[in-house]
Length: 519
Image (tube, rainbow, N blue to C red):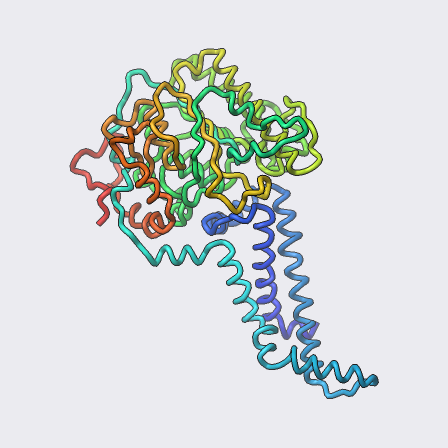
């Protein structure tokens, strides 16, 4: 104990160093190898609240595989270092001559001053651990991109300054984010070899098969913000998410709020998770999360699958609740925007009781059944709405919030070849075959006839209905997909130069300072 008190500082440094290494391994094992620094910084920013509302499985594995072993390894490392030092300083001759020989070699090779400084020094060890963490998650790229700044003002069309149409025949909107839905899901199969995307593909609408995720959109809240506000979820955005005035971060729902849409956001987990609920409330939504759904449907028992992912409700429960709400609003003659974020296809997967499951003996088969089950439930939801006539004047979008994580598809290191699932049901003709997250909001607003005919841009996005002959989309796409252009520094400059807030709900007019001209 006396030795431990004497070396308390070294112990704390070693513990922190081992924690960094173990945290890195835990993150890559749990969430895959392509976690990016933006996600790390966002979760650090939301801190205890974000950890508190995360699934119990993550909390337990975090403690077992990072905190506890970090303490144990630092104790072992500290006492081993002390023992090595005793051996080095000892002049004792051992009874067996061969042992003396090997002790001398050990002292010469492993306990030289150089090795002692660079191997058994806690401060140096902490530097090694920190560098490992920084390079693993692309932090070097963060610093490098912020050091370089290129000005491309034409890329961004300030949503707050657009003069939107107010169509006489307003259309409804259903926007459905399916957790981790990408086209590579089709590579999952069981013995009958049927496509797990079968039911998603049968939902009415036209697919876009070349949908690459935009910069900093590798997790749910990032994908939602990028697709509804048409800008990347860079550090300057995520660290001020609920502080940025709507006039600076003007999103799809803010446009619809001006036109008196009833807007409800359905979230299968607790609304506090990743601060998603507060963000949606700030931008005009009523939030029905797992707590509201469970209360209203009197769901008192949780199955093991529900408690496995953030104590979420099944997709079927969420949609049963939503259908009742939607029918009320529809029959009242109000226009609505229902936005959904599901959870059944999130690892470790949930299976609605409406589904008859096949083999779930390994992770790949579990994923297969989860996607197939979720697709079946979601298609039934849309079929029911269609039979009620609700889809007649409604734009429907079904998409993945981000690419799937973990090593399910064997292509985790080839993100550039993977595509998010995207389907839109609209009476307008799609003009091109590729898109990214930023293009979702302008596409929806264009389908709703709200985006003006002389402008198909919104933020960094461009509507899928933009005539390619009038706009060089490929050039625009190539620029906005580059991290070094849409850097954190770029966004910081961009969000700073906006007009002051207005309270009358009107467009700011021709004399307003245009954000697109960054000085």
